[in-house]
Amino acid sequence: MKNTGRWWLAIIAVFAVIIYSLSSILLPFVAGMVAAYFLNPLVHRLERLGVSRTLSTVIITLIFFLLIATAAALLLPMVEEQIAAFIDHVPDYRHSLEVRFGPMVNHWLRQLSHKDFERLQGALGEHAGVVAQWALEILGSVLKGGLALMDILSLMFIMPIVTFYLLRDWEVLVAKVDGWLPKDHAEIIRGRLIEIDQTLSAFVRGQALVCLILGAYYGLALSVAGIELGLVIGLLAGLLSFVPYLGMLSGLMVAMAMAFAQTGEWTLPAIVAGLFAIGHLAESNFLTPRLVGNRVGLHPLWVMFALMSGGALVGLVGLLLAVPVAAIAGVIIRYVMARYLESPLYGGTERM
Image (cartoon, rainbow, N blue to C red):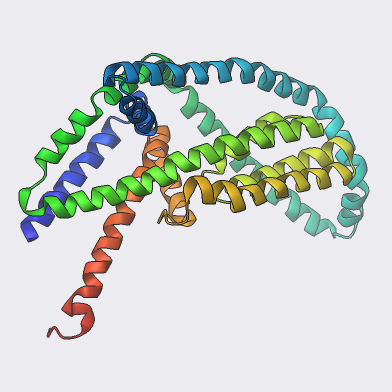
């Protein structure tokens, strides 16, 4: 048993080293794997209707990437237009905020002594320097070596090929991996793999649909309400809804700040709050129970930790792998804890 555990730890360690070492070229392959996993049930449905696996794969892959291209062609001009309008109106926002909060800030500053004012000014200057350095480091990492452009090109040309071949050969690959399982532990491993698949299918596929619906709703609702950058804020809020509450709260704060900067009054921010309240009620009472389910087994904090850790370690590749790795770790931890609770060590009958 000890040797088996060591083998599994060695396999996990080798896999982690490979991912970390090759993270700069893995993006289209990992993205293709995620897309293939997401689309596989649709291919199965076409197969049940009598369509061959290859033809089903061609149809689903073409429809999927045509939808992505169409959405990009429709959304990018609108996003560009909203960003340009926002940049043009930045001076107006600054003037509105100065009129609203300027007297309050000046009154507060007059209450400070000269020494306290100098301390506050020094602290602001120090933190501003840190923020500027952090921003420059991020910009440098994005632009370094033209990797951003290469990532986009690889996603455009390599990801569809990876998705097609994985979808076409999905059953063959699953059978091949199943044949590699150690015979003494094959049934136990199959049981855990089925549990992992159920967790991932419920969370990834279901939550992805929830994010798309929420992004469309928030983007359209904020744009109709007259929020500049409303489409951008709404789409980002929907995307961040992959982590429960994060998308709603972050989108609400940014949209309310934008609404207040535009008008200097509380009417538009109140409308924004109402729109996000409707979206949150629809998400918690209808979308998530119907599309995701209540037995996913992935706590929001665990998902958030996995996403932040994956992004910090290997960037965008880590973000794509974070949830599958979190699901696998969660299933393994639950299995180990169940075995521990059934063992004499927990029951107290085993002597030290």
